[in-house]
Length: 72
Image 1 (cartoon, helix red, strand yellow):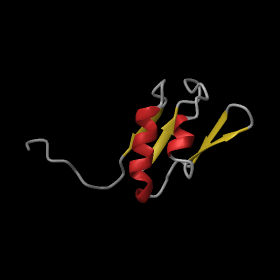
Image 2 (image 1 turned 120 degrees about the vertical axis):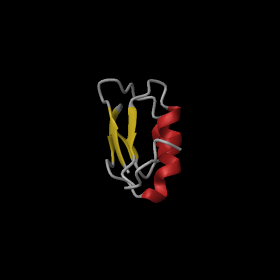
Image 3 (image 1 turned 120 degrees about the horizontal axis):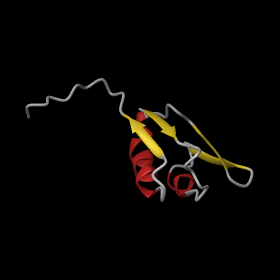
Image 4 (image 1 turned 45 degrees about the vertical axis):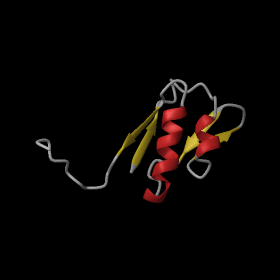
């Protein structure tokens, strides 16, 4: 899994920090830092953190290698 945070959009609400503190951290007052390639065991936490972001600044790219069948 790979994640990206649009730091221009991020307003420092820190909902992601509360939901996935192993992946997202606040440095100082409002500077967000994060692990761009968290372990897959953190997937649920990261998905919840992305969903909870009030400004939708977190994007998740699934690198699980499984191609989806478009015809299903």
